[in-house]
Image (cartoon, rainbow, N blue to C red):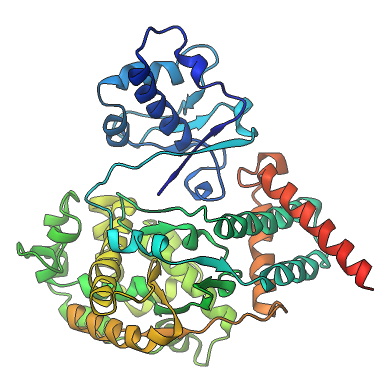
Length: 481
């Protein structure tokens, strides 16, 4: 279920007052208006889809599918006139990119009203995963509040700039608002049409808070694919994946409409030995540490490994030769030069967005269509949730899930996967790793902000929630003293 939101300042019904419509017709048009407006409302769940100016892409396919015969009419109501409700980015060029839209700034800081509108069932839905949110009770261990206050106190005690303290309050308030939503049963879950990933309230929950998530009062054990994107890349670098016309593990099944994939097979010719060497990388151990050891001649630090892990996304999707020769990116290029050439050729043909969709759709095929479906068939009573390349279940089923996941991935890809099983640490004392994680996030973000009121992810509801929380806990602590 996806929640539809709209600014409280905006009188939706007034938009249709000048039109003579039957009650049913007015209701149907109202739904279309609400869904279009909801697309440009920034929330804690969709902020990643917006650029720094508050614009988000909305494809013509979505608009036509939603608006049908009302396309031009609804478009004019919302996007024309001297003071449109939705603004279109001026720099848009036909045929070069998806149009970018944003909510008129006067509505952007308005409190949001929430409405539950049923989503049309598309072929991308996964009923057995949707059902997990209906038949299981999700909550947060109450200790999460003590943990968040301790985390806030630790980071706030550091020498931060004023805008960094605002970002810290927003970070804590965002976590608290999502925790509130879970505890109140307000859950979101849907499958993306573009990359076929399954997105939910769980995927949105801050990483440092996830250990406190409970399902039917039990903690959730996660099983992750180590170095998932390099592992998946290695598995698709073969002629069968790129040319097979049969149903199964191939581009035709996974991304049938990707343009240009028919040109991929020749790029592999003459590089078979290098591809095989890449496939023989120790994905079942620690691929990133393996690359770093080859470069540094020693065991890498945890921080060095994390940096390389983040740089991997740039290696896969950043198509600039000069940039690929800088910093940690050159490690991959130096150790796997032919793989670098193949990736660059792929990117030249279909672009970074479609190539990322190809890898993400492949991940979704393996994790959702194969691992999760088979696990659900074998253990229909077992809870199962996903965070992209990670699958979660309760402790009594974790060993069975691990074994099934290992066998399934190995069988389909022909490459031994690396899996990591993680039991949640519910200590209320934040680790140095978690403190540094939050600190790096706010430092990085603050470096890109000229004025804090321009930071699109800083929402009034988050700041208010954080301030109320800090006052409440501080007051309680003073009373107990």
